Image (cartoon, rainbow, N blue to C red; front, side):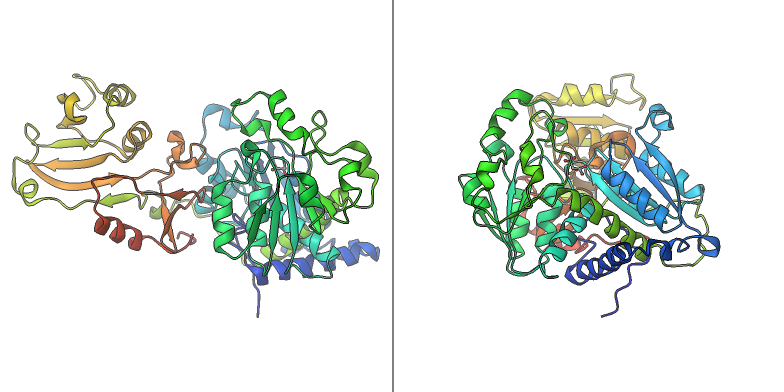
Length: 505
Ligand code: MLT
């Protein structure tokens, strides 16, 4: 089968790649590795120079050592140029510039591809939606880190007779807050007959969301009691550091270190094991989830992973940037970025269609089915008061948790703010005494999802993953809760969603 990755966005290892493409990239990366071993790195020096000149933008909103440098090195060794930022200081993000505009500015500056990292889950899918040039995800919040998973699989590939089927993998450390584990498990789920064993305290354990997706795709997942149970029964053991920065201070660092203690990788624990040890790095120098002497054993592949990342990134850039067509900067955003597909339409009852449906209101908006006790917060968040911007009257019906806004209109941002305070509000748009539109406004529940960042204006979008509703941006499952919505209405909504994360035009 012909594989063409030119201009492909690499945002999610689950949605953007498959078994054939991953194996293809491993083969290409192996060629890069062979050139290096044969002292022929220079052969590729002019790949992206002269008429084929390409420039890579890096946009790192979060710190990075390996990922940024590996793309930098890869591009340098292919003869391409690169520029960008690491950390937001010194950029207009300090003036609240959005991701959307920053991405467009990179494009206006004639970059050919973007590699980006951001603390919010889904920020990368959004960047890819906005950009007309390919975007590579270098990590988005707790969501995905697809190029790390690719280099991890490539490392296994070359140590495992070029096969990624039938693997027995162990996982340890913090499986809950990182993105490398999520992408690694999803990557493995493209292959056959994979068994994953893991051991960790509940707080650091493998999240249900990852478990569910992987099992549905045929991966066998077993929770064990101890590291020894895992490490003595796997071929590759993948350790991760505690992701303190993503825990939001829920538990103190010393408590986490305590939880991890039993799971540290020590010489004693690997004594009877033949498992090759992997880690995306960095190891936390204080917690030392891998004991120092372990670095000197032949079991470890940590540093090899790092160099394999260069070969893999070279292969990836080579494939993605191989299209030589001249690209004209498109200075308009596509309409598809303006609205979500998150409005679950509700049937309008005959009496509502006819008239006097919602008393007192002739023209305006009625917010129905709000959670009790949220009215005041909603009013203050929307700056609604008797003399509000709408110049209208606000009828605050506490008993029924309804907010009626007379002669007023609400914006998409307003709906989002309301849904963040009171999930799944029913919105009734009233014109001349009749209900013209009635829908439940759905918003991804993942607090770290980019769709919940008000200033970014990312329209909530979902897709239908075999009957499961998922957020287009962070991939989190969404269960419709509103009791007022009938099963039929839900079914119509789910069926109306696209079946996968498709490129928006
Ligand atoms: C990441 O950004 O997720 C790193 O590559 C791994 C880590 O920080 O633990």
